[in-house]
Amino acid sequence: MNEQGMQQAQRLATLLSGGIRGGGYYPAGHPAALQPFREMAHLAGIMHREADEIRLAVVDGVLSVGEHLFFAPTAPLEELARRLEEKGIFGITLKPGVSDRDLMTLARLMAESAGGAAELKEGLAQAAVEAVEVREEDNLSRTYNEAVGAIRDIFHEIGHGRIPNSRRMLTVVSSLASSAVREPAALLGLTLLKDYDNYTFQHSVNVGVLAMALAASMGQSPHEVEQAGMAGFLHDVGKTRVNKVILNKPGKLSDEEYREMKRHPEYGAEIVRQMEGVPEQVAEAVLGHHIRHDRQGYPEWARELPFGKASGIVAVADCYDATTTLRAYQRPMQPKQAVDKILSLCGTSLDTEIVERFLELTGRFPTGSLVRLDSNEIAVVVTPSTRECGAAAVKVVLDAVGTPLREPELRSLVGGGGCIVDLVDPSVRGIDVSRYF
Image (cartoon, rainbow, N blue to C red):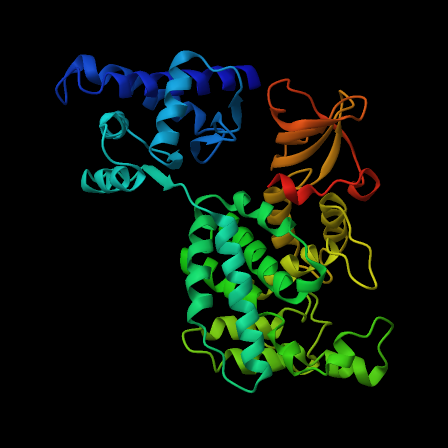
């Protein structure tokens, strides 16, 4: 089945490349021009039985179609990859129901020498093509850093007794939410950056990013994805009203200190309700992110209140990021270990349905896991998967005898490219996995 999928993916890309190259040979609607696109539409229909969307992209210079990577491309595939890069196209997504005429329009617009991704998107919109989506090349890392700055500003304003300005945060949430809706798993690599000195702000942003990815993977609307992101960004904002001595205490809190710490969700909800442009649902999620699925959490007085999905989504995201981060009182877990920890909390602290969707998003070995392959090479998981091989794509960083590679090797594990056999502790190997994203 994997080999057949690879052949279908290669044929689809080959036909698109040929269609672009011959885009001006025939007038629109000519039978000879339409024939290859009929075959493309038929192939897409078959591939859509296995995946909701088919995405063509260039990853580290390698063409990918769905989860298939082409490391030794034929001339047509090499030409297609070059065109995508030249036009600044981060990805082209073919949605279910894409027609031969949709694909023909895409090829004709791609054949035009002038213009890039923005012009291609505009041309598809003018032609009323809705089953083809073009994603412009963007810099998620830059947006992530902007989000950290926005949260830092909010915390500082509250610390000075002011109602925080939410405009900057709303802008970055909108940008990240758009990326989450297009490709939820792409955001997971952003959360691998861990800076102990910047923990408070990065943790808040990481929880927001994870919440958006999770909400999008659950099929929530773009508006709901944005709300989940805002709730994640602001879930700990109430800690600005908790005494810093309590917040920074390395040992166990006294009963009185713990009672004060448990008030941060209600402090946070009060602050969020004063922020311009932030919906009430966000304040509700901030209030409820520690209420637990079994309603045995805090604040105790809010246990009987009706909470939406956002609070449960933030709770899962919060648990995952907190357990994978170095703290004064905690050694960080690997992403796979954190997922196992989350799984153990199903039905008590965490909502089982949300956890199950999170597991589908992260795959058997989440993005950022350091793993040993059956070849004895050491690799970092780049694209997760639920398949038996363990991941769709990895970057090999150490060879079979443990020698670091000068340049990491991007490798597909789908279709016989190898499989993951074990986890590896990055601290033992002295490897910072975040540098590969």
